[in-house]
Amino acid sequence: MNSRTIHNRCGEYVMLDLFQRANLIDATSRGISEINRTIQRLKKECPQAFHTKDTLASRMFYHRPPEHTPCGGFVDGRMND
Image 1 (cartoon, rainbow, N blue to C red):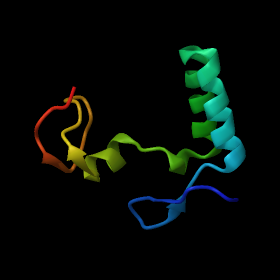
Image 2 (cartoon, rainbow, N blue to C red):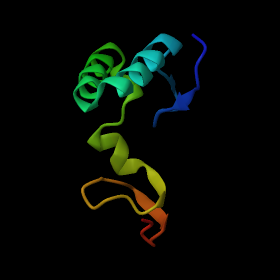
Image 3 (cartoon, rainbow, N blue to C red):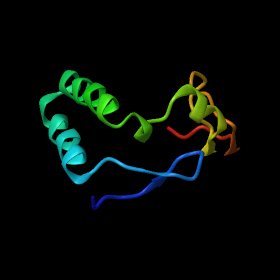
Image 4 (spheres, one colour):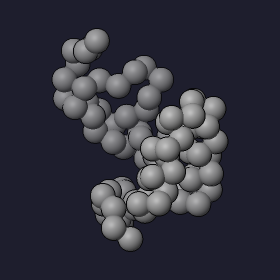
């Protein structure tokens, strides 16, 4: 697999492979319903590559995320448009 590497909370490498990422990019040309279907399929294929409420709750953001997004904290509280 040759793709961008992401570390999860446990320090493990988690990633979508190039084919999975290409499928997601391709779905963008067919609208939000296809994007959502593709994401659901990818979550089944590679669940560790996606955040959950538990992993987001420990994540630090630079900008304050929306109120509905759990997080471990943020650096800059100013909202950007």
